[in-house]
Image 1: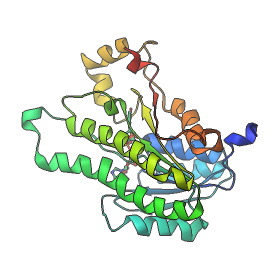
Image 2: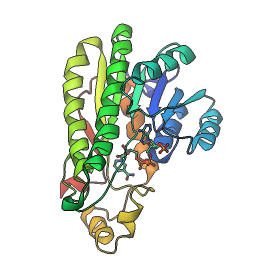
Image 3: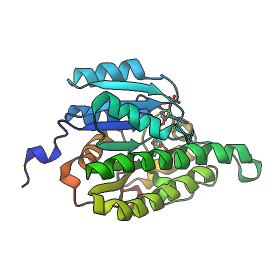
Amino acid sequence: MFDQNSFSLAGKVALITGGAHGLGQFYSIALSEYGADIFVVSASQRGWDETKEKVEANGQQVAFLQQDITDPDAADAIVQAVIEKFGHLDILVNNAGIQLRNDVLEFKDEDWRKVIDVNLNGLYYLSHAAAKVMSDQQHGKIINIGSMQSYRAGKRIFPYAASKHAVMGLTKAYADALAPYHIQVNGLAPGYISTDMTKPLQEDPVRGPEIAAHIPSGDWGKPEQLMGPMVFLASAASDYVTGVMLPVDGGYLLR
Ligand code: NDP
């Protein structure tokens, strides 16, 4: 049976890491627009007031927990906080991520560890905790945020590239392992999107124009253009899609 309700998220609960700021805020708004209640976990309260206002304007409930996701002991407690607040967890969006940039020979081990800790370890801890609850429920959606760096090699952000390649591998393996529990695990790989994180690139006199020239339309993406693909991956419309990393890149990877 397929109709408009296939995209509805009414009665669903989504946990979104970093869901109050940057692209995460757009995911919170998108999923609440289609009827999901939202639970945000973030390192700081950046963007929280605005996100709360926008999700509530969509008629949905929203809750916030300030917590560093790199703490391996925090993941079960985060998932339990969602269950206590809303009773179930249907969608996990692993969006929190950081990027540190330097020349390869200057890169510090501690910076490597910081990137891997947030982008890969934190994502894994929460996926593991959510999978335990979702497998009992016999349904769930896990959506991991990748990047063009899941496919390509940014030489000044190589820990970021390593982490985002690993996110793709984890997405596939988890999709296979969790399919018997009717849990779909997919990734969404934003292309070059105009945000704070990409400001240095946009303003780089060499790389900025180079990137625009590589995108078939010549346009950097807008955060709003990720909202439809996010709703699709979170909804019943994608129930037979699992283990993919969906590039939302204006065709960047075609070249
Ligand atoms: P932002 O820096 O704007 O947002 C990242 C969010 O993650 C923030 O809310 C931040 O919290 C949170 N966060 C970071 N570290 C932790 C932590 N240890 N524990 C809990 N929360 C944490 O980044 P973007 O919105 O630009 O990026 C979001 C995701 O999209 C990332 O995974 C990024 O790699 C990916 N991406 C972004 C692209 C872009 O063009 N911007 C392109 C491709 C992928 P706080 O605000 O408190 O720091």
